[in-house]
Length: 266
Image (cartoon, rainbow, N blue to C red; front, side, top):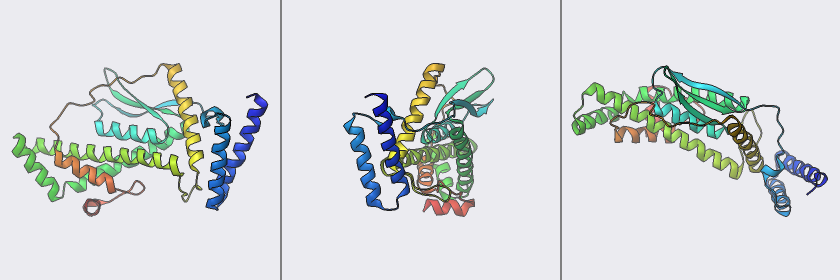
């Protein structure tokens, strides 16, 4: 395929993408999506081959989690899940004096990761604080003390840590499920953005992942797996309580106080 044909194909695809984005008629949008896929199939192309999206943003890296103390695993897992949702990557490093997690991607996406990570960390801490006032928390303490013979203070640390990990894991999992749904069905309209078709979502993700992979290869970035914090005795019940909280907690607005935990725990 010569450059002229490729330019013509790009123009056709741009018009089809614009039709998918601009129409409110579901049949028209579906027909445009079908035609788009037919053109790609006809020329043996993928979205990555066409690379419609143009950007002046260069890939960067930014430290979001940094501390002289070991970074809790739940915060790292949560950050990684958020980064993947926004087509970024994380890299875990540790020096003699501190540990930190870098996020790599387009600056605008890194900014979204940082804001969302701050919000979800705050959400988890709020719900954990509310969880401490519940009977489920007390029963988890009693169970851990009976099964492992550890003090109440140590059991409390382990129970709350287990709860946070369970909730963080479930929130990260929900973000990945949302990502797959958006790539399959499109991104729903919000107050600040119009509906985005599935084809456009996939196209943007493919282009950004390509750019990021090239940058990582060029800069020889890699992540060494390290123990960010010591192993501990997990509370199975608290982990499940955290997962339940993460299953039903809103990804868009916070839940306040003990009554909030009771609502999401029902």
